[in-house]
Image (cartoon, rainbow over the protein chains, first blue to last red):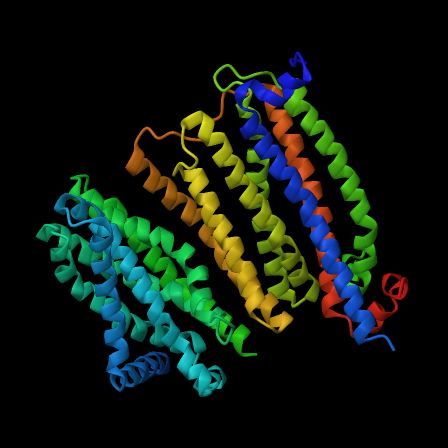
Length: 54
Length: 224
Length: 247
């Protein structure tokens, strides 16, 4: 390990904005995407119950 | 030969239809002229700069003008049922499609080649460079018609088809743009344009072989 | 011998996918954890780029995935057009948004990597420009399918488009490389990475595998949802436990 402290880790040798901007957006999108799919699935199930089940 | 006569029949019919609506042809041409006029207005009239951007600018205007013309390739025939007749006819659909694409090029592409010297003068391009430009357009505009036909066939009757065709087809146009404009720039820089022309020619041959076939497949998908 | 054709119908594929999804999420989590650990704690600080180069552990895997997914879509497209199976079209449609996401991440991380290293948020190098065009191809596919109302026709049109696209991608990439070398000569390449320590290669590889597992999980989820949307009027859907529960 090369990080002396937690603040070192966040600073990323001065590149913190870029590194965390990258990993952060990656994490956000890869959490948002499955959530959106889940939402779409819920909507589809609702439509089936409303339209097709007697 | 029935195949050849089918080709010429389709070609002849489309040209006849265009002749009855000459304004449509002229609209595409004027679009080309207007776009190429907008560029100096947006960038500035400095001759050195204009000479530099001329090949790319004129090529982009050619792309956009061709895209405009694609609307007419299948839409009218689709609307009045002629297209279905063509699909059902005993003639091979790809031959009829090839005829229609040729008509599209004659109406939308070839005039751009002939207009190029006039526009080239607006950009103060030297005469030999204009010649190279015309040659690239001569080889490249059929490519644009061929590739564009695939997009037009895929988006038949789809919502927002005009913009959608542009979105689908412009990425496919990028190699043609790069080699076409690049040939002129390379020639002006004294590096020779043979490499570009060979690649452009190769692309044209590939497209001529495959695009009518892909367009036919797309038409069958859109018409079922 | 597994009878693959048994699973080519949505009604049998749906429960199979349902069992596979948690497996791939678990795989993605484990691979992601290992990959991130390597990215931050094993891979050494780079001599020239300092800590900023660590973006590579997302940028390169995302690029790889965006291209790989496009090829997989083309594969499903070919299968769908040849055998006229419904499932193939659903798989392509399920994969497209994820592929577009990775293309976007590749571009985003490319910009964030380029700014501190080369001073500009965007450089017209061959790889980045090709990635941008690939992103347009994904958007075109999604837009085409959205514009066509009939799902079967949308599937087939999308399939043809992705086959035309996959054939054009090498041509586009070649032409962009050509354009790039002619115009910039000794061009700066974002992808001429620092000489790779093996830890860096492992990190990228494992992150790529994590992204791959993630893609399968999300695509299977989306494919199941597409099946629900399209086959709502069928018996097998109406008898699904997911539909019956929590009315």
